[in-house]
Image 1 (cartoon, helix red, strand yellow):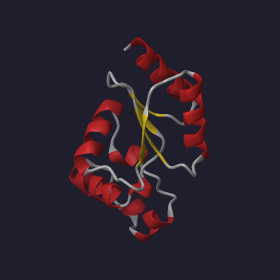
Image 2: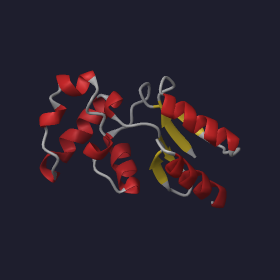
Image 3: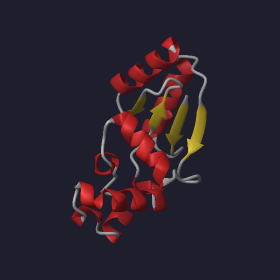
Image 4: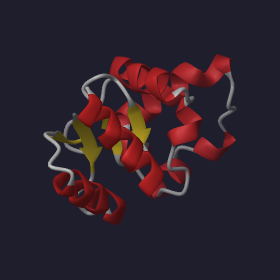
Length: 123
């Protein structure tokens, strides 16, 4: 299991607490220090069944600097969204957790955390 997190984020700390309580074996990726590549983002989005704008943190200061809110949310601009998120990982929602069998969630709520923990326990 892998978790992309920002240690300063309360949702990330909650996710770690829940993973530890479930005795889950996981690897931490501080995605602000080791940003995901475009290919990694594409893979994660595929597992999530989402588009880049679905996991974008558009309220971040850098999003405003980049005029991210003006960027169309369509297939024509998808690669630009991916590039901007890879170059500016603070734009990526967190935590993103992937179980070893592939189940991936944005672990911001108890249901998502439970889903990925159950998937890992059943792997």
